[in-house]
Image (tube, rainbow, N blue to C red; front, top):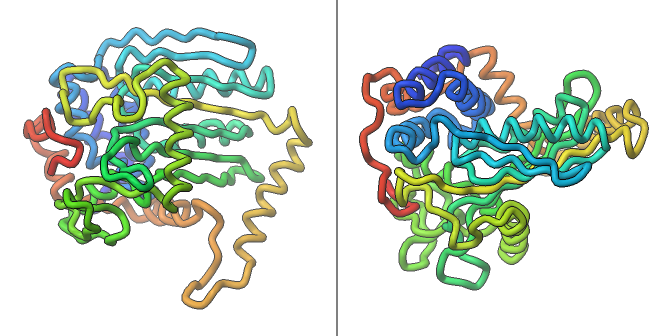
Length: 349
């Protein structure tokens, strides 16, 4: 089913407000989800709405949060999200970070006690559209085996980066520190499609291509991904005085309680380090250089990081966003949720 950005945004807003979220917060959440869907990252798009609706309706998302923002230094601050919608808290925290970086050149803003906040690319692009460099990391459910281990300890713990080129161009990079994000497993389940057997293992520790048999995810590049997810956990958990490692709350364990997740934004103003016009010119030149490199056999063109998603966004902006039929049917239905996530393990089907 293909839908326009505007139609998808309205469908998501309607469902979330019916679940109990305020119209203003629902608008922000919908904005982040549509951002993901239009870029083809459906694992972080509309397919998440039913889960959010169930958590909202059961009280696990605070629909009237008291966000507090405390500057802890000229370049540092913490926003406490009071376990409201993570998307709203993370966006507000990035707005603060942008303003601080414009004043001081650097900003580091922690976001503590929030729920799931969606695709990190949304927040780093907030900074890049202001002519700044944005970096964001966040912790997530323990569902990844550490290198050499047989039990889950860390989450997919993503990292995102964006920087401005000339005009309106941005270079954006957003990755999980696992071979693939958990949301991609959920997307495969929603489409009843197989997954590569390099993504995850079953409950016996054996690689599987069945998304419904996934028990634990695998870190990207073995010990390197393991080290990166440790770094993200320190920066977005331990640094903010939050639960860490396998103490991080499960997405599905108890939908009546807040998740107390953490996120960290780092923003840099290039003009404090170099000539801004030259910086933006060189970002654009980097993109051109990469595109001009001779492709290897089997490739048509070398893309700069994130360019594949930029191309998908252009296509979907023009022709509509393809949404899985089951997700669309849920969005247009009168059902708030099907009570299928609460008290499940992280690999609930």
